[in-house]
Image (cartoon, rainbow, N blue to C red; front, top):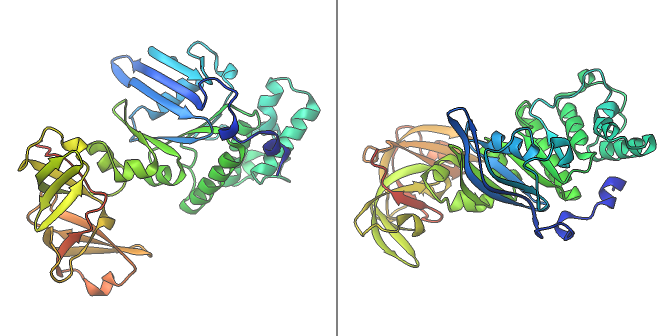
Length: 381
């Protein structure tokens, strides 16, 4: 282990800063650009040492929030705290944050070592200290031996590691990552996700990560803040936001989903039951509060919760296989259903047997396990 990693205690053991385990706090933060509200009354707590992802579509406010935390923008209202200290009026370079930009922003005329050590030189650290810390962080990101190369002599993944090393070498209180994988190909992207997660865990650095990629957010994060239209819609673990979405937007945006027309059968403090075809499905009661039995609802079902019905199994819909998409470990069946508003269901089946067992044109009945489905009042629009 490098001395950089050895000298820093794991973040979850660090109880010295204010507000105990909270590293970053936003309290009703708002930001407008002319007549456009980019962020509205956003409140969020990021725990010390966790990797929090801001997830949402383009224009939802996630990069604005990141820039507000970094100090590149000033909030119009609300309070931003880092380690219990209000930083609304604190300059970026005094916030003790490290930031990795989408385009890496490396200096082309500097070597790898020069790029990584730039922030330390600006802080006027002694030359031997700079050399030691640069060597430590380059070893951490697996770039030892490339100190004298320039950015143009590096691959995309190596350039990304240089940018990460530059952000880490200053030993930031908070690491901010703005869609850092967007320029990488799929395989390199997956490899770098694993590496950044390992480094983040090893150093225990509080990290806020911005992405619009749902799979990236689910695989990397300790918690996810799902955003839309300048608002935070839900904050929770990846499992929470995927299995127990709080509203229609979260249910639709995070992962694949089929929306089916159903009816509320019963509702009490323990949960709700909705009826669909011959099946009765248990769902969380919260989103359906105020409805009465018989009310129309929209049932959101994940493709892995659906399967081709066996003999005697309750069927939620009948349809015809319109397409098969082979995905290696599973097959996606696209099934046309005439009696549902969506007109098509996505059924995800493990293995590859579905390719021959249910070819295109086959009429099938679709059943559901009923686990982890969610229902919301019918969207009349």
